[in-house]
Image (cartoon, rainbow, N blue to C red; front, side, top):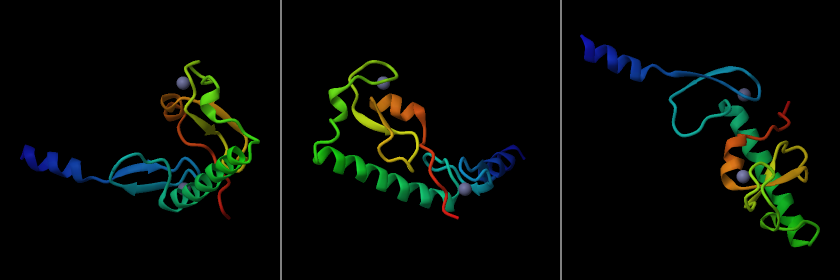
Length: 112
Ligand SMILES: [Zn+2]
Ligand SMILES: [Zn+2]
C-alpha cells in the first residue's frame, strides 16, 4: 500500500537538534526551527532585549543607523544591525537583510 506508507512518512515527526542545548526534540517542521521549545523562549526574550538596546542607543545618538554603513558581508548598503551574541547587545555589525538571514541565529546565554 504505497499511499499509506507515504502518509506515514509525512506524519513521522522530524527530529530536530536544538542549536543551543543540543537536545533532540520532536516537532513537525513549521517555518524556521532553531531551538527546542524552552530555548526558543529564552532566545526570543534575549533577542527582544538586544534589539531594544540597539533602539535606545540609536535614539540617544550613540549609535548611527545601520543604513549609514555598508554590509560587512557583501558591501551593499546595510539595512539592520546584526547580533552574533545576544548577551552582548551592542556587539553588532551592519548587514543587509539577506546576509543577516544567511548568518542564522545569534547565540545567547541560556537561562540555568
Ligand atoms: Zn534547547
Ligand atoms: Zn549583505
